[in-house]
Length: 189
Image 1 (cartoon, rainbow, N blue to C red):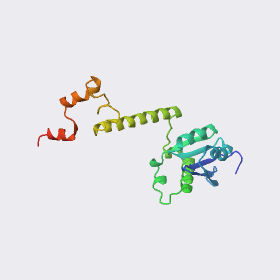
Image 2 (image 1 turned 135 degrees about the vertical axis):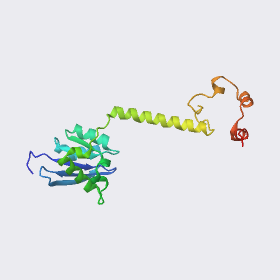
Image 3 (image 1 turned 90 degrees about the vertical axis):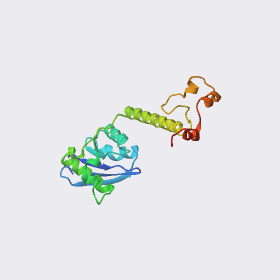
């Protein structure tokens, strides 16, 4: 391998381990390596290859890995595997073949990988917070709809009338029947 040759690195990310396949300009496999999916190991393995192209698949780890690799002066391409039949329809699917296929596709034509751009870390944090709030609200609303009154809110996220207007629970029971049996007894047959 020439000292100044451009390398293309395909990286299949896993929860515990990741696999890389390094191709030279001629498309020959220069090296393969499997290592732990940690920031420290990524830095140790890939920082000597600064300035080259690394291709990873979209997934759980791709946001932080793509930011880390960019900070190591690597050119990063995040591929959408659902758009690439060679990856998601491969009958001999493995980390090793996925890494090699990513590298080969990026070497020939990166647009084949339908690359995506991850949101910034701050925007991801905001979206996670908003998602958690939405789920919490749905849990509260669901509890009220089932009669649990989990959060003390009505079915539309507002306080029930008796709490809003300071009505006592005895007075409310006289005005409005409670429970599923009372509701069912008022329904036409």
